[in-house]
Length: 86
Image (tube, rainbow, N blue to C red; front, side, top):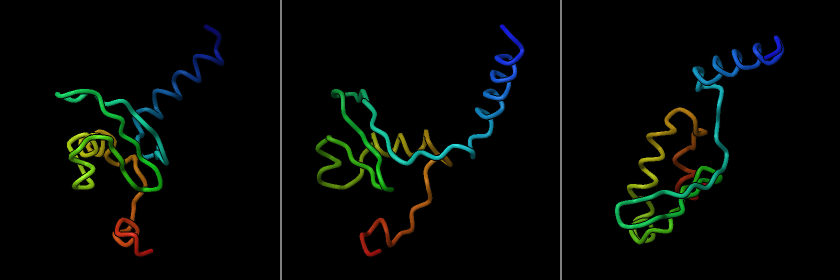
């Protein structure tokens, strides 16, 4: 490996430890739950999941699990934005 690549690998390792540098704006994931696979997405500060619980409550174990995994890596959303006031 050349010196340029070695430097990039070292920089990547530092970045990976500095999670505050990373902010997810939008994404979609396949989530394997206990009762089947689900599609979970995040866009504009809002979660969505194709499971029945999310459809009735607006939150589910899949979206809450991803919130925990990505703690500190999602943009801060004001409560007014969540409620659709802003």
